[in-house]
Amino acid sequence: MHNGHEGAKTPQQLYASLSRLDSSYTPAACAQYAQWIDEIRALKQERNAVVLAHNYQRPEIFAVADFIGDSLELARQAKQVAADVIVFCGVHFMAETAKIVNPERTVLLPDLRAGCSLSASITAEALADRKERLRRAYPDLQVVCYVNTTADVKAESDVCCTSANAVKVIDALDSQHILFVPDENLARYVQTQTTKTILSWEGNCYVHHHITPEQILAVRRNLPHVKVLVHPECRADVIQLADAVLSTSAMVRYAKESPAQEFLIVTECGLSDRLFLEVPEKKFYKSCKLCAYMKMITLEGVLTSLREMRYEITLPEDVRVGAERSLNRMFELSA
Ligand code: 13P
Ligand code: SF4
Image (cartoon, rainbow, N blue to C red; front, top):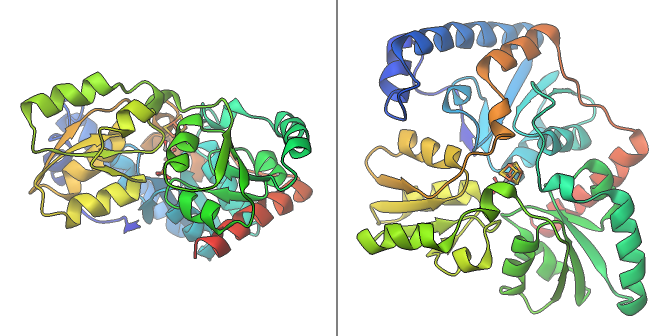
């Protein structure tokens, strides 16, 4: 977990920092961002709000974030928030998770188009049906859902997990047969790390699934010493080429702590941007793709969200309680 509010504040500081990433960060764009950042900070105080941001967010969002992290860290953080309002800079299932674990707070998602292809690949009804059929063959079956799912899918599952704790959670269960939903790539990866029998769903993340081994090999050919860090939502033939398979925040820790100087970051591009800004003394190459859902969240959107208190995440209480059970079991098993 990284605390935000560090780094650039004035238009000149913002420009000096962000223009290193790409040419869209012009002096004029950075002046506008600096103004929005000031307005957001004032509104946060007025509303008693905190901003939680996922590692894939736009770099200018990090300037208003109180916490930046991976899905597990953000879920843990959301549980502890004492402020009245949580503005979630991430995708819908993440904001929903914040509401599940901290229902007393108002949770805002600045743009409702911020969905997730993986979370959209499964419904609670389809899961209930598959679970019932599989339990006839495997009476001990337990359902583990990835956090990238809607609240009603979490409520239909026995326990939730994230990329940071999937193996730990599955190993801690007392069943041999596990239905892991919905990411087929993560299911395949977990199978290589456990003696449990993993049955998978047919879902994937459109960002990670489209990264190919050829892209990795092309970089490795020219830079054989580069450390390849891969997210476990990638395909098995990409994971095979990894030096380490890690959640987004684990990649940040690895890059900071490793004696290696050069890394190939194989995940959504926001993560390499974060590393590029935070660890300037090391070199980061990208084999990445943008997540259009994550990039729906903009600074202007955060400002409007706080001004108009939109879009509020709400859940039927029975679904929330069911999903909370699944998340709490994850917190217990991965503590
Ligand atoms: P992390 O939990 O590793 O941050 O992953 C979230 C996600 O959506 C990856 O695509
Ligand atoms: Fe979903 Fe993939 Fe985007 Fe993560 S990167 S939010 S899994 S679509």
